[in-house]
Picture 1 (tube, rainbow, N blue to C red):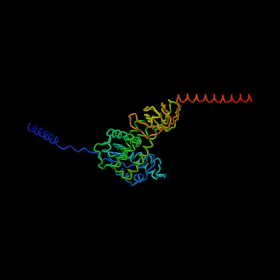
Picture 2 (picture 1 turned 90 degrees about the vertical axis):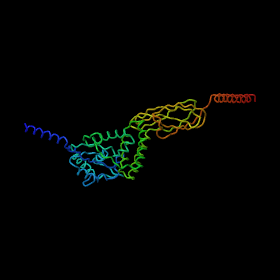
Picture 3 (picture 1 turned 30 degrees about the horizontal axis):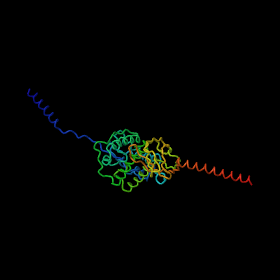
Picture 4 (picture 1 turned 180 degrees about the vertical axis):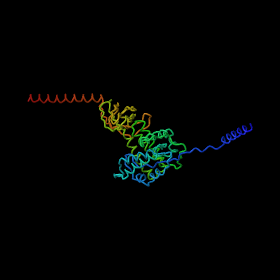
Length: 372
């Protein structure tokens, strides 16, 4: 009995000790982050060959991959992988030189896939923008950007990609420059406006690329260069929908005139046509909602009422369906040569009198000759 009691005491003591013993720390896989700044323009040409050097043997990105732990969580920017895929297919470096690192890009991609293996893979937001800054601009947009980035990375690497970012992913304390943030906001605002009139996929692609402006590792020279490229692209996109100028002559009080709107997007566009005459010689319809099919022109019939003879210029511009001014203004030139009914009666009467007078003169001459 005494021996049994001692055994019970030993068991209870063991349970108490194990209950308060510290648990082993949960092993967290180290993070391996693979990202870089942009190296490719919107048109597909590369600005230089520095990315090729980085993925070559002993290059910065190559060493990061080759020295990565066997067990790790990978976090990769899809922009970088898409650029490498372009390089591996053959690429051009500005102004028009053949790239030298096609084979190196292909080898690096195979090495990267092999090192990732079955490990967990996450996508950085496309272009590696500062997360805090991008979230402040729009939390919803950042969430969508993260989802799109995961899909793009999965497609580019042909590997499964986990949603979101890994727990404990460090926030980059370095912030993009004020110039970069200002340039991004201007581009962002214009792209959103274009997006309200058409759903052309080119708009979304440029919006995706613009996130690279908020990459805190861009120096001022790169920020300025990318901002100029993106602004030029956005201006070109905005001009794809516009009112064409025209010249018209009105010879009656009420006429229907054709105003032409052009849509160069590969998707339909919907806008509101606004017309405003610069003087009171003409009264003209305005605020007409118009849908233009992809890659086409549409003539909109507008009723114009002539008030007085002379020349008048009519401002023709577009708005979004939400009332925001869109694109550049063009002008329609009108010449009004309207002959009123009273003037017509006077002129007809004068013509009749002139014909009668001429006939009377001819009759008198003929009679005079007959008498002589």
